[in-house]
Image (cartoon, rainbow, N blue to C red; front, side, top):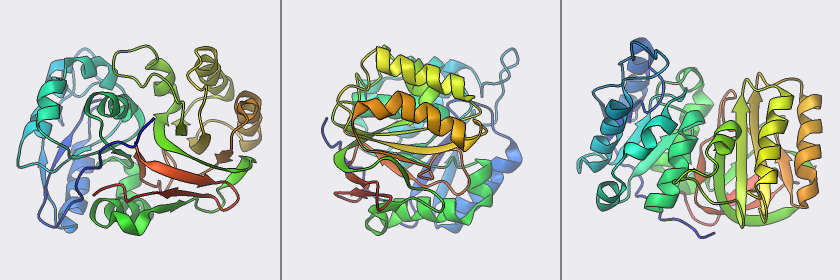
Length: 310
């Protein structure tokens, strides 16, 4: 597994597009997120269907074709330097196969950021475009709008990525489940999406040589066990260099989660760190995917060889 291409960092005045590839976005949250982006000196533009809601399937922001067209148009617009997802939810799997990857590849490298259901797109951007992407807060996400730490870390990653080359677990995080130091290329995202993406055309074929980042929300311990067991049985976890576990909001008590992780991941024989502070939890860190990094479980750090953006 190799380091992917790093997109250029942002500068004041940069035009950024906000898209909704999955769930519908409340207008008040969208406006609040746009105000934050404008406060950073960015020029945000909203894709046409961000506020849409399908009539029959009201958990989707517009039709699959509309959401795919929004993302592709934003990415291929030469005036746009970054594409930020407004939220997660569900729906990226339904539209990812509708994207014209040749056209998007021709548009050149840009910043792409989002989390949760957007995991499917992070995998596709890695396999089809070969790009480093940012697994971080959504532009209209509740935690992003209310948490200064989440805002500050995303902003630093976008504008001054050298200042956040060392990613440090926030208290009381950084607990070593399996101690050690290791290196690899970061990959991953939301565990349930990694499991459901197995075998699809745009998914990574496996985690070999990678530093695997995983988190989720609202999944009971037995369901997390099921997802991890699926990854194990398919061999997708074979050869992973190390594992970094983020937030597990509303997934059950820590003791039960730790038992699942120890049982399913402890036998891999690689360093594993818990509670690192990215994903659906409060004050989520922005984690680059596709970058070479070193994990030190004792220090509770993931240190990038190079800044996430060039």
